[in-house]
Length: 304
Image 1 (cartoon, helix red, strand yellow):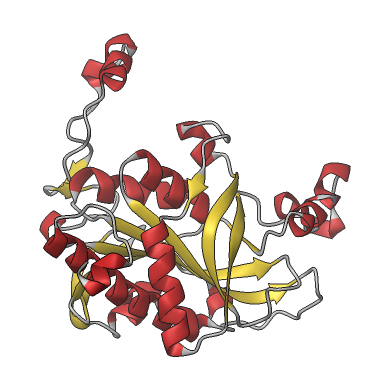
Image 2 (cartoon, one colour):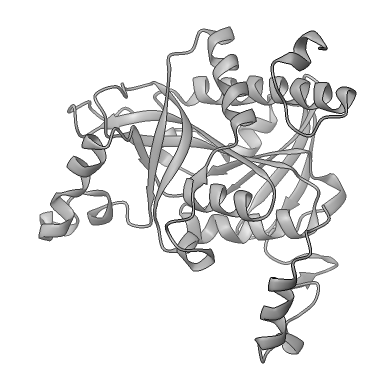
């Protein structure tokens, strides 16, 4: 994907005294991006971002598991950190990447995908903790935007920058949930680096500080539905670099309501929903292309 050239960014290069020492086009091993080891030509138009999460009870590498649901799946990249498969679902060419959890690790994969491929859409799918009475165990949560409390996205741009989910992704996911009859909610996700005290939960020996104990109440009063550790960097990088971002979660516990943890609760539903949502998004993209439009709107369905 051709990156937009901005004079203001070029100015940063001029002011950056080490610019000439930066490896260009980046770090490579055996002709492939070092971090993901992807074959650049094998990456699809749509990317699912997963983490190797025992709470989701995948039973195997989530990229491999989701790839089994695709037609003609092929291994597109495998490194010590990330595994990526590509296949087709109802005509949509989809890649799915698995790796470790947290925004700092996901950033590494996103940088490779955005720097070296034409992938247009990145969707985080996985487990989340409920922080609202509306988020029931097993529910699918379609994120409308992300409250950024992580440090990784702040390194890119201040926290005042919006981490919204692209309206086309949100629309497709809602439509998919309705078609499939999946229990779902739409709302804001909070994302942070710390899964314990930074998420309002006690750490070792019950350790907490006064500023930790207000976290969950703050989220709940603000109407935030769930929390995770990856969505902030996905939306921030998508919005900065001209991609579409989105997130679909499944709720495995809810500390606000006392809903007990149940591993894998909603995993299959969220996976089915996001794949069907991408198929619908692919239809929307074809409607845009046929009409010569860059943004989807409902009139395109009727061809008006």
